[in-house]
Structures are given as C-alpha cells and as structure tokens.
Length: 80
Image 1 (tube, rainbow, N blue to C red):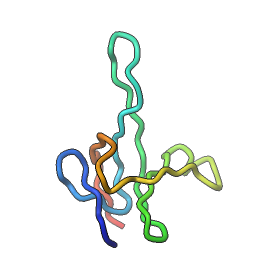
Image 2: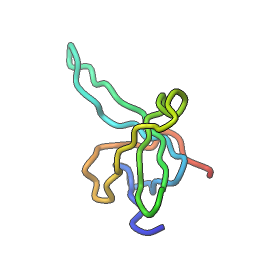
Image 3: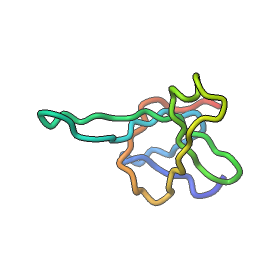
C-alpha cells in the first residue's frame, strides 16, 4: 500500500477505519457529518457508506484522495 492518506490531525488512515466527513451546514449553523468506512481495493482508497454496507449488495463508494481534499477525521481506527 502506497500513498497512505492522513486525516486532518495527521493520523494515517488504515483499512477498516471509520472517518467523520463534513456533509453540510444546516439550520442555525449546525454542522452535519457523514461517517464512512475506509477500504483499500485494487490500489485505491475508498470511503464506503456505513448504511449501504448493511443494506446494499453493491455499496456506494467514493475515492479517498491522498491529497487532503476533504476535511475528515478518524473516529475509530481499523484493525483489519
């Protein structure tokens, strides 16, 4: 595994980590977040929606950029 991304605090992301990712700002400036599970598939880091892991056979994925495009934070480290 090369180009291991880091969260906003500098922690390296590992397979199975749960990250908190900013989603939108709601009423009264309340910030809403999404939670994603990180996986490494065929040389690419992906964030997978937690609810789609349970419900869908083919879960929705997004590519986690190694350049920190996203302001995300690890909330639980993976132990896979």
